[in-house]
Length: 98
Image (cartoon, rainbow, N blue to C red; front, side):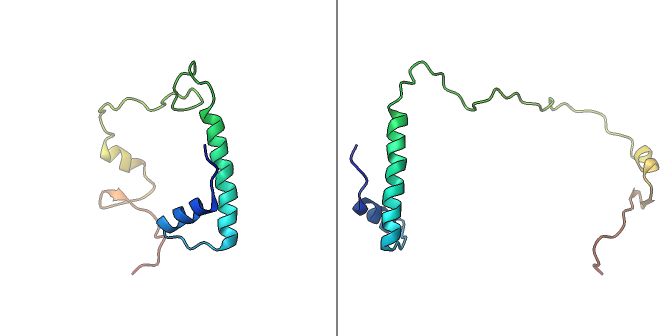
Protein backbone atom coordinates (compact mmCIF):
# COMPACT_ATOMS: atom_id res chain seq x y z
CA UNK A 1 0.00 0.00 0.00
CA UNK A 2 1.21 3.47 -0.80
CA UNK A 3 2.47 5.73 1.95
CA UNK A 4 0.17 8.48 3.23
CA UNK A 5 1.34 11.80 1.89
CA UNK A 6 0.98 15.39 2.97
CA UNK A 7 -1.25 15.94 -0.05
CA UNK A 8 -3.56 13.14 1.18
CA UNK A 9 -3.94 14.81 4.56
CA UNK A 10 -4.54 18.21 2.95
CA UNK A 11 -7.19 16.64 0.69
CA UNK A 12 -9.00 14.93 3.59
CA UNK A 13 -8.81 18.11 5.67
CA UNK A 14 -10.30 20.09 2.79
CA UNK A 15 -13.14 17.52 2.42
CA UNK A 16 -13.79 17.70 6.17
CA UNK A 17 -13.55 21.49 6.05
CA UNK A 18 -10.78 21.51 8.61
CA UNK A 19 -8.34 24.38 8.66
CA UNK A 20 -4.98 22.82 9.51
CA UNK A 21 -1.71 24.69 9.81
CA UNK A 22 1.59 23.27 8.53
CA UNK A 23 2.52 21.74 11.89
CA UNK A 24 -0.84 19.98 12.17
CA UNK A 25 -0.58 18.64 8.62
CA UNK A 26 2.87 17.23 9.39
CA UNK A 27 1.62 15.75 12.68
CA UNK A 28 -1.43 14.12 11.12
CA UNK A 29 0.56 12.81 8.16
CA UNK A 30 2.93 11.10 10.57
CA UNK A 31 0.24 9.83 12.98
CA UNK A 32 -2.20 8.65 10.33
CA UNK A 33 0.66 6.90 8.55
CA UNK A 34 1.40 4.93 11.73
CA UNK A 35 -2.30 4.01 12.06
CA UNK A 36 -2.50 2.85 8.44
CA UNK A 37 0.70 0.85 8.83
CA UNK A 38 -0.74 -0.89 11.89
CA UNK A 39 -4.01 -1.59 10.02
CA UNK A 40 -1.95 -3.17 7.23
CA UNK A 41 -0.22 -5.40 9.77
CA UNK A 42 -3.57 -6.49 11.25
CA UNK A 43 -5.02 -7.10 7.80
CA UNK A 44 -2.03 -9.29 6.97
CA UNK A 45 -2.67 -11.69 9.86
CA UNK A 46 -3.93 -15.18 9.12
CA UNK A 47 -7.35 -15.25 10.81
CA UNK A 48 -8.69 -18.20 8.86
CA UNK A 49 -9.14 -20.39 11.98
CA UNK A 50 -10.26 -17.58 14.31
CA UNK A 51 -14.02 -17.67 14.93
CA UNK A 52 -15.86 -14.35 14.67
CA UNK A 53 -16.71 -12.84 18.03
CA UNK A 54 -18.66 -9.85 19.27
CA UNK A 55 -16.84 -9.54 22.61
CA UNK A 56 -13.50 -10.89 23.84
CA UNK A 57 -14.95 -12.10 27.18
CA UNK A 58 -17.68 -14.75 27.55
CA UNK A 59 -20.47 -12.58 28.96
CA UNK A 60 -23.91 -13.88 29.87
CA UNK A 61 -27.02 -11.75 29.94
CA UNK A 62 -28.07 -11.37 33.59
CA UNK A 63 -31.55 -9.98 32.95
CA UNK A 64 -34.51 -11.99 34.13
CA UNK A 65 -37.33 -12.88 31.80
CA UNK A 66 -39.99 -10.22 31.37
CA UNK A 67 -43.04 -11.88 32.88
CA UNK A 68 -46.08 -10.11 34.34
CA UNK A 69 -46.52 -10.33 38.10
CA UNK A 70 -49.11 -9.12 40.55
CA UNK A 71 -48.32 -5.66 41.89
CA UNK A 72 -48.00 -4.92 45.57
CA UNK A 73 -51.14 -3.71 47.25
CA UNK A 74 -51.12 0.10 47.27
CA UNK A 75 -52.60 0.44 50.76
CA UNK A 76 -50.08 -2.03 52.22
CA UNK A 77 -47.17 -0.16 50.64
CA UNK A 78 -48.40 3.22 51.82
CA UNK A 79 -48.95 1.80 55.29
CA UNK A 80 -45.21 1.02 55.49
CA UNK A 81 -44.17 4.55 54.41
CA UNK A 82 -42.93 6.98 57.07
CA UNK A 83 -45.33 9.67 55.79
CA UNK A 84 -48.16 9.81 53.25
CA UNK A 85 -50.47 12.48 51.89
CA UNK A 86 -53.40 12.09 49.47
CA UNK A 87 -52.58 8.40 48.90
CA UNK A 88 -48.96 9.20 47.91
CA UNK A 89 -45.56 9.09 49.59
CA UNK A 90 -44.78 12.33 51.38
CA UNK A 91 -41.13 13.35 50.96
CA UNK A 92 -39.19 16.36 52.20
CA UNK A 93 -38.97 19.32 49.84
CA UNK A 94 -35.57 19.44 48.17
CA UNK A 95 -36.00 22.55 46.04
CA UNK A 96 -37.01 26.03 47.08
CA UNK A 97 -39.59 26.30 44.33
CA UNK A 98 -42.68 28.34 45.13
